[in-house]
Length: 243
Image (cartoon, rainbow, N blue to C red; front, side):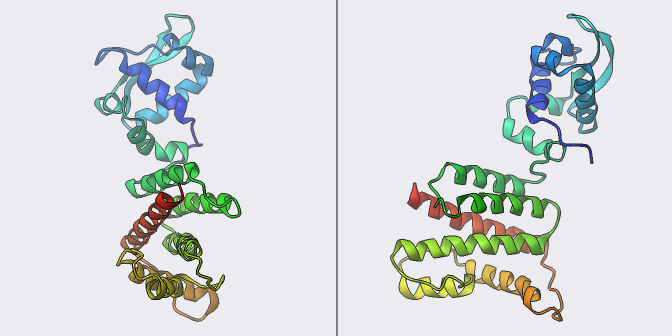
């Protein structure tokens, strides 16, 4: 995997290419940002983007503003992405160390929403970091870790529901018991019906942390996705009540 690239420079290459006519050779030297980055840097980026079929036909040329550069053309895919920053970020996710799938993209968007929210300062930084780790673990197919981290976020949100309604709960209570408390003491509080199944999946994944001899129940990708979206839904519902 190549080193992480700067998304802003990738965006400049694509957007600079988009101002040229389809099939026209793009001269990097006519972009101030690309000139500032330098020939070697821009050449590296063009090479990586050509591997993703965002640019094509790279070849040496003498730049209009001086120096030898690698000219290129935008592919149809690259041209279509010029006005869609979110989609471009997703496509080049592996190059910039960002989201690699639509699922992890949804986690990144959740993180951005949380960054704007007035989350309790006592755990805000850890909360945001945990959401970022969920994205990374899912992209690396570490589904046990993904589910465990989602459990951590769910516990925080469920406790917030209880605290917001001035109901004292065991600080060590986990998802299953927290759900039970909310259903018993706050019957009017909406909870996604799938949360009980999610709690079961989380519990099964955590058993091995305290019972070393248990057979490890490796969760599937679909289970991880279900847990992620149930977590995302609960977080967003909580954010709507604290903003």
